[in-house]
Image 1 (cartoon, rainbow, N blue to C red):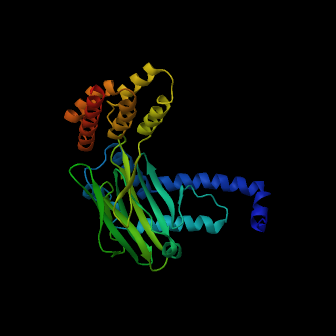
Image 2 (image 1 turned 90 degrees about the horizontal axis):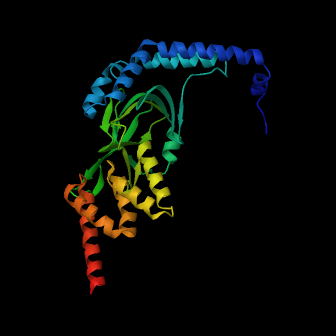
Image 3 (image 1 turned 90 degrees about the vertical axis):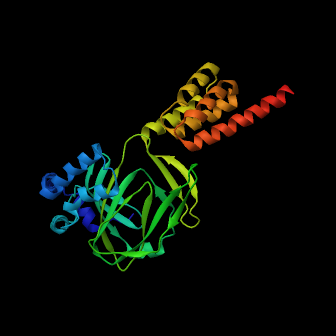
Length: 320
């Protein structure tokens, strides 16, 4: 492996490494204490604990950071000064990398964060179309420098019985310094082109910690592809469900499934009901009946009724 001469010199210079370590700690403390960053961190922490009611409120809370962008230039200038002083200076930043976007986290507080993203216009032009992800949160994008950016907006339309599809609006430019805020549960925005590398200021916040769901849709057809779990607690319960169904003790399996079908999360309730119906239909039937009458999710109520009908037909056939 070929090693750059500058890297070789750095690796053997213990004094330089120690100096940069100390300077990095000092710069990190100064960065987080910088008034715009310190105030932003406080606002994001409050937002994480008490999420806004809608995307408009989300944008209004962050107005002090989206109406005057001098603070962004101050941050970039401080980064540049550090790197000019030494190629191996330590920046106290969390990198958020992808083939098209290179992000630097400005502040991360619980479920809320702010970052600067550099859009690689060449990589963007060559990138394949990505599927859309809708989750339970708010997001805001503000172009703050570089080339002009064009974006497409998508709206998620849900039917009365849980069916859904995505509707795309016509592509339009994102004006410089103009915030674009949206509710990620129902809307999404996708950058499709940039006239040269561009810099975006991004803010995001999850609405709540529990029951967070993630939906993936195809951008071409607008159809749903899959549903995931954005909540680690639900994810652990799904893993537990998979483990339970692999056990040999019938009583353990039955008891665990009965508990899980009464969980607060709709996905988990139905994922537990499926093996319960297959293995213990007599136990499942009265629970299905209660689901048809009382489950808060209309799609589960509908499917539970269909399964009850199927079980009744099977029982009638067996009786005959």
